[in-house]
Image 1 (tube, rainbow, N blue to C red):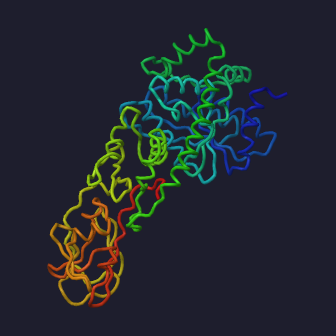
Image 2 (image 1 turned 30 degrees about the horizontal axis):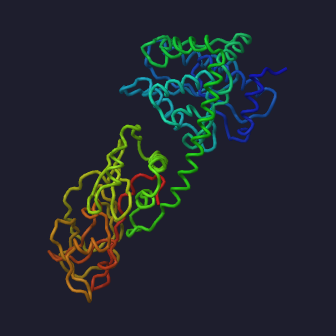
Image 3 (image 1 turned 90 degrees about the horizontal axis):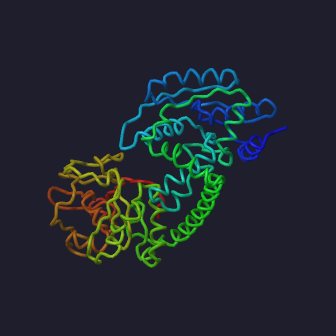
Length: 441
């Protein structure tokens, strides 16, 4: 007869039965040892996706050097293939966070399309995560704690034991004679999580026996709340489409007037949703930069600097810039007759010349100021005024490739008013840096 633990596990994994493979994040500790044993036992009586284990060795403490061997013995006894991955952890402000990042990067790199990584985290871990984030002042998304499933690399991550307690896992392990690794660092109460786990949570559970179950239930409620906020943000995002004056500029952008018409709370919810794939977000006390950007005068060029890029305002739109867009350009003076293929511009995308240029001294350069352009039937126009009329964002202008015949400006890339040279109909095409690929419009 199956235990409640086994029944919950099998019910939780039913939607994943068609996955190409199940990969188990196997640390050798209690949680992953129980998960591995449960799955190996199940696989003996039913057809399941191929099961294998991944052990990530961080090399952060001497005791850890024996763990891959232990994991190999356990997997051999259960007939489960094991892959040991050795990673280098780059120390930072938080060694825990650095080790976690290295571990999940290793998992991400090894998941093939559609495969599922199964993690042994349980209800106590969920309660601990919510409490830890609450003490750090997290918002709804953070307090939703660990989702039961999410995408990971080319596959997905699933936590099938989130509704089971640590006590249930220990009882199962002891009843089946399992052996597992006890990480010595888990006893070090200098780490905040360990202090919560060893000192605070037992005290709370003594006063409120259903503490972990109630906290985990609250995390599920907050998860549903976050889902509703995401759906609202997606609706608001759909309304920010608008039309850019520069459709060739494939940067994430939003129509500012639509965003500004929302309540402050919906503005922040929309921006969190939009920016989440692009950058680490500020906490609730550091959103003044958004207000300064939104409320600046029409002729201003405000910038909101975030961890992984910058939010600019131009042509009535919000633009996300990162990577090459934030690197200063070196002066350009590239002699050219024609380009049969695209030519790479350092930190500035590619340029392509369509057609044959007449004889002369032709060069590609960037704007220096004071340039003017002779337009067919319109006379000579100041380039700055022309760019203003065409609503080209200010951050783009220093990057626009300009085609000169000697010292005479003949064409500006991607602008239809200047794209044809009278003697030959030559067109200058520029593919700017792509930038980050988030929820762009």
